[in-house]
Length: 250
Image (spheres, rainbow, N blue to C red):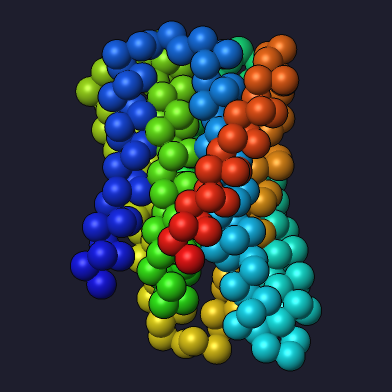
């Protein structure tokens, strides 16, 4: 349990680390953020497949593949539903911002909501990984999510400061988004440990949410500023790095 809590704090703290870097470099270039975010997408993709989806098939037994497919789509559809129902800013950085409903909400609230929408299921994915009992795979999943949180924390600082939010409040809001991930990690862990019967579905569900975030948010964002080739190779590097790490730890 101590390891789970420390990992949860580390995953959530990665957003804060990114925020600190964001304060140091208030204007992060699109090229840099695209490369870093693509690398993180590759890491998350490998973590989702190797640490969540494949174990789901294995633990599911005779009907493992069926449970896994249903779980993947359930996770993606759940996040898609939240994406449509909760007012937020669809993109985290840049000026090309797409708003959903309630335009009177402040930009700050929309930014924070957007981060929270994705941090909660990512935290749950990390927690479910620990609930499976495979600590090495769980750490790989958590590491991949933490890597993604660093550039995410970086890119939200500039827009917040530009919209007139004080530095202190900006930092507090960044910490709040990290706390959401800590809560998600604990929810995922306890949900699986309470009932091991839901483990195959929970693993696939968490994997589906991660695949959704990668495809719907991360890849489009990294291919929107003219750095597609570099972003693609960065994704491949991240994926292969996690693949090698998984083999060495396995």
